[in-house]
Amino acid sequence: MMKEIDLEIFSPVHEVRHPLLDEKGIYLYLKRDDLIHPVISGNKWRKLKYLLKKAREEKRSHLVTFGGAYSNHLIATAAAAAQFGFKATGIVRGEEVMNDHIFLCRLYGMELIFVDRESYRKKAALFAHYFGDDADALFIDEGGASPEGALGCAEIVDELMDNYHHIFCACGTGTTAAGIINGINNNYLETEFHAVPVFKNGGFMANEIDKYVLKPSVYQLHTDYHFGGYAKATRELISFIKQFVMATGILIEPVYTGKMLHAIFDLAAKNYFQPGNKILAVHTGGLLGLLGMADKF
Ligand SMILES: *Cc1c(COP(=O)(O)O)cnc(C)c1O
Image (tube, rainbow, N blue to C red; front, side, top):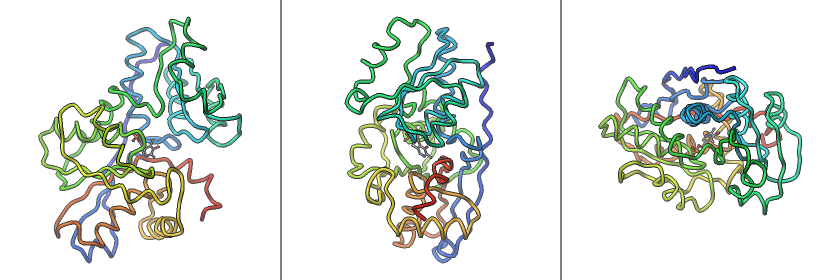
């Protein structure tokens, strides 16, 4: 079954109203990539678009990729494989577990191979070991990190109907951020880009972003909003998320979008923005993870 790779993207821009924004005279909009798919992170869909096209062009019918047991990218790959008629294998870090992510990967038909953390680090060796003689297999890096991934994410900017002074995005691999920077450059915009790494000591994220940025670019890296590190959350972050969801009716989660929006509100409170500034935050999704985190709230 060879369905054409035609990922439908539905991602409107919605204004967020909040007393702090009114007080500071600034305007916040969300690019609703969370609406692209009910369980898959929107930016994962975008990152896969050109990887799937590449797989088709190279006549590879088997997608092989990598992730942790809570990886949004693994589910996205599993879902895309099912939709477009690819076989999919996920190589998962750590010992075998069962959770919503793993359940959905299997439901979409992905084969899973659990490997210890030491072996997981050597992804090329793992791929060679399991699929070295499978000419149909395409290696897709963890998180969909790739030039093709950045190409898909540049379309976030192509879709915008309005101009913004600032665009914000949460960073894991930095591929989405790089794509947005390329999109800003492609469209000759003056917009300032802001990356919010979700890891502790996120300064290294600049190197990751720069791998996929097509021309040297100036952007801001806000490394103080990790709240303890990857997938960690503090009381402060959780109470911000509760308050944001109640005030806006838009769901956000603690791993990515909660940290990015907390950064925007904290910077706003510190008068970082000029009155009249229009800020676009990319809601990259990730809501499946939220449902597994009720104990943090
Ligand atoms: C994966 C993910 C990100 C990070 O995207 P990168 O391109 O890896 O930086 C941000 N938000 C959500 C919800 C994600 O699932």
